[in-house]
Length: 297
Image (cartoon, rainbow, N blue to C red; front, side, top):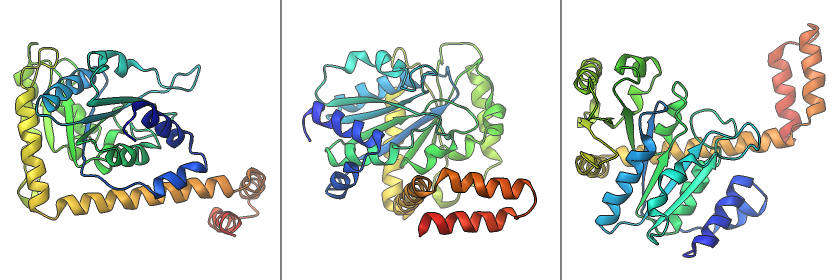
C-alpha cells in the first residue's frame, strides 16, 4: 500500500462502501498512528494550521496522512476540495498523503467513512493522521470519538469562547488554539477561554492548555506540536488511550450495523408502517420493532 495511487484507490472504495471493502479491511494490519482531530467554526484557519502542522511533523521525520473533510457540493455531491488547494505546498512530498472526503450530509463534521479511512492510513504506516472537520459548528462534537487528541481552534472576530461553549465544542478539546494571533482581541479570546475552562472539572490529570498561533507564518505551531506530544505521553501513561480507542471501535461497529440495517430495510415496509402510525392504527414503538424484525430477519 506504499503507492499513493493504490492508497487513493482504496480510500475511494472505502468512501463508496462497496462489498469489496470488507475483504481488504479485514486483512489490514494495524499500525501505530496517532489520530489528531482539528475542529472549530468555519474561518478560524483549520486548513492553514493543518498545513503548518504537516510542516512541523515532517521536519521531525514523521509520515503524515491528512483526511480533510469538505462540505459536499450541492451540485455534484462531492467534496469541494478547498482544503487540498490550501495544502498544495505539500503535494510533492512523498511523506505526506492528503485526501479530501465529502461529508455527503453526514452530521458531526465528518464523513461516514472516516473511521475506515483512518484504518487504511494507519495500516499504510503513517505516524500521524490529521483529521480536519467541515467546520459546521454545533455538530462538530463527533470528532472527539474519532481522534486520540482533539485541537479546538478559535480566532478573534469569529465569535468568542461563549459561542464555542454554546456549540458544545469546549467539551471535546484536549488543546485549545487561538489562531490568527496577529489580529486584535486575541487576548480577549484567551481570557474568555480561561474563564470557561476554569468552570470545568478535569479528571485524570490533563487540563487542556490554551495556545496562540499564526498559522500563516507558523508562529506558535512548535508549541502546539509540543503540547500534542505531551498529551500523547499522558494518554499512554494512563488508561485514557485504551478507553478512547474502545469508544471509537464501539461507535464504528454501531455505525456499520445501522448502515447495514438501513440497506436491508425495504422502503415499502417503512412507508407501510409510517402510514399506520400516521393514521393512529399503530404506535411508533411497535412500528420500530416490526421494522427491526424485517431488517434483521
